[in-house]
Image (tube, rainbow, N blue to C red):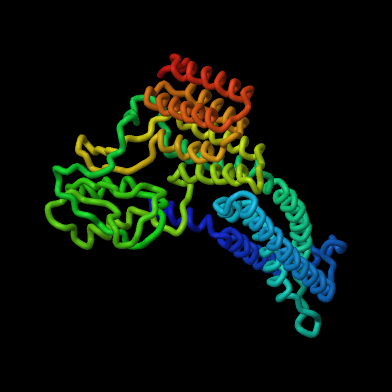
Length: 444
């Protein structure tokens, strides 16, 4: 099942997959309508001569016009897509390009245009004049006209979609929405609902009391996903413990340790292959099992906005706001413990994210690039207060308090205006008081 999900995710991210499905559907539709034309009697179609009364030359001309115009529209659409990709890469960050490529709207619209073109070619091939044994699939030709009108509507919609999608607010909101969905999928259980608390430190090294055998990575790349059930099953079948040397989102180098097994003897090739198969490694990261990568995309946009060459404070503020929404989603949730048990037996020691690491990923670099920027500092302080109100975990609140302290230190050494310093100090005091206060959360 995990391999099927990985395959489906890869196919969905391919720019050609959805258009190919639509083209195949258009071929099937053309063949079905042509066959229907050969079955339906001419007297029945003759009842509507204005709809189904085109001759061979007229039908051929209309199909040729529609096909050629659709190819022109495809060229214009590709040009628009390439322009958007180039602008988004230079204006925001190259890491959001994959979101544009994965856009279902773009894939469907391109599929519609190429599908109409293919449909017209199939129908055009069957039209014959009197010398060739006259046959005009009037029903298919008329439906081709309907498809052409639909293609015009799709083009108008696509122009609107492109204009809306290149706005900073749309790009940031899209990345945040995808990340929040990943958070809901990865951390579904809220604290206080009987789940293991996530305040345990992630293990940096395997326990020394066991004999650990390293399994090397078969290729270099980023770990996109891990089949957790497959790891537990492998550990059970080999009666061992699997310790992950690398977590999801990390880069692994070929022939370096990928994971370790607690075994007296080196694992056989079958076990090595089974372990490597549970890790999906690729050239790029995805958000599916890597919420930190979604955060990374928004942080990169904020850093580009704060750069001296762009200095777009409004965009940076939006990034902080959406990062706040993501962390607010994570704050009351339980991050699964690194130790995975089955029937009381320790099977897997995983390497995964923590609230502190996700908090640092969200704000550390933005804070470093926010010197003298009172607006961003104030916005981050407000973010920490909001997130703190949603968690009663002492450890998480302590991490938020440390972030507040670092903002206060940054303001002290970089903000020159006495008025601005007083404002920041006052807000720091309010946020500290809110973090140290008892949270007003509904229990249970």
